[in-house]
Amino acid sequence: MSTSRSITDAQINAYVDGELDEASRLEFEQLLLNNPEDAARVAAYKQQNDELQNLYGALIEEPVPAEMRKMVMQHKSRPSLAPWMQVAAAVTLLLVGGITGWGLRGTQPREIVAAAVPEYVERAVGAHFVYTSEVLHPVEVTAAREAHLVGWLSKRLGNPVKMPNLVSIGYNLVGGRLLEDQGSPAAQFMYEDASGRRVTVYVRSYDGNDTAFKFFTSKEVSAFYWIDAPFAYALSGELPRQELMNIAQVVYKEISP
Amino acid sequence: MNKRQAILDEIPRLRRFAQALAGDRDIADDLVQDCLERALGGLHTWQENSNMRAWLFTILRNTYFNQLRASSRRPNETPLDEHHDSLNATPPAQAHGLIIRDLQFALKLLSDQHREVVLLVGLEGMNYKETAGILGVPKGTVMSRLSRARELLKQYMEHGENGNRPPLRRVK
Image (cartoon, one colour):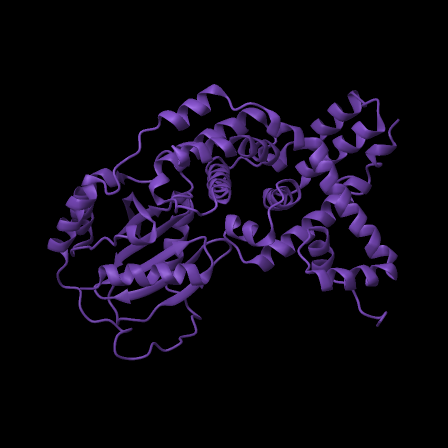
């Protein structure tokens, strides 16, 4: 047995939480014999868990409050596809028009070092952060008036906007709002999944060549952005890169002709 | 109906987690109600045979963090003096009680993100994979947050929040 093997924080925690397999656990216990400091940490962490149980364990004995029980038992389940969505699907078909050409098709996207992130992307991410956190009024026009919303935003942006439908991946439309982006109008569509995670699609008019997906991340919010003339898009969310990428692909498919 | 019964069965755990996370009973029950509302509204998206507990916990913590941001309410910024006063004013009689208070105090000093991971793993007994799913982060992030959180808790419990405060358990 090698006594010089050092113990990592990850091992200590994994041991305390029973995440090690049998062989690793036995090996770890051997190592611990020669590392009294680490053994003390193991003991301290186990004690934290014990104290958590002392402190909060009994709370699950409490009976379920009557109003919560009633809420669960009497809630009316809603139809699987809301009527407005059926209407909306028809409306978006009519509105899709001149969106053509796409850098991603045909040629491989070049990996562009995003030394200069377009300013609109930062504004998109900022708008995501600001508006997704609003619980009561996260949107200007709610999903219930989706057809109106698309028409209204298309008119403001000067071109027919197609609003992506993300229901297939579990994201329902919350609604949208019109924003000002350095004197130009921009639209933000907000979506939410059943667990409350929100993503936003930001659209503004843009003069420039089509691009592939590019990735931008700030502190908490990440975004995939691309240009598909006459619009520039940014999909923002507080999600892992791969998950956001999957959503971006659905958004792209939805808005392409 | 089975799904509804499955939700009902999780309410005690949701309330406990909410209370430990938010540190306040009334806020916790409001949070659970919001969570139930969302869950019931999105019940058709819940996949049969998937983990109801993990799903509800995900909704609950997302609701909590959304609301926290919306109101910019930072429970961590409760003036520390308040805790000192209340703790010093009523020293518990038993050493056991002191240790418990110590942990409760130390938990409040943690950031919300650190507190939630300690509670999910240490109190609720979720494994790392489930916890990663609930938080929407990679497993490695769960492990590093957990490691940091436990070390902070240990420090707070041994030395107080800045090292100057004498350990509470020595107050007799």
